Image (cartoon, rainbow, N blue to C red; front, side, top):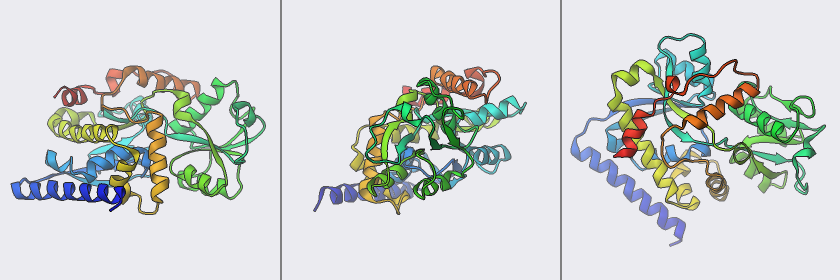
Length: 332
């Protein structure tokens, strides 16, 4: 039996054991409706927590849906159609500044760097940032953190976005990769595994990590309504405990082992590409080992937003980010 088969067998037995244990105890699971911003390898610790039964062990059953956009995920959370919204905290900032009374609050962090990589169309290019001058980049949605981080990185290299380089921001997230592969643009900023797939086909080369370039930043966070956090703190402690276990598991295992667990969430992705994508994220320290939010990283996010012209003034960390829940979990 191959090493990969052994890993899959061991994990399958472990999951069955957890599920049987929960059933045998007669514990009634509480359903938590979780909306994720997109389905992405970037969120592997979450899928580990789901697949290995960490939520069930906390007495929770996760009803997972994909919003395909932070704006849509935030709207679902505000409307009450979901209990937890997983998206970038820029949405929480925008909603708070619109004057919402029962605004949304982040309580646990899963990713602490931008998950985008930067690809050149020419696989033979000897890349340096000055190469993009006069060229076209397939970027992301204006107002979203991926686009703001791209602009921040360009400016850090003395390149003026939309002046020294054209950036296409009108494409939907799921359409950008296909457009680039069809010939649009000279470069693209995008998440894995899409770029590793293009690279494997010889149609481009990953030349930089925007996450590594921009440094640690509050990036993808679990949110709930302020009132709900105050009314049911124990529910969110249990939720965060499961996430924390997923983070720890990923930190202690190889990309191959992580891929074996999360592969059911990515049935159309080649196994080797999945492993390579996970390894890329591990190499840039995309995944913090605890869910505790950092004030410095949150302020860095707002610095990026201010520089992009998407924010007029900063919001205090304590207003929009709750560290009590995550600290309770970690202190255990």
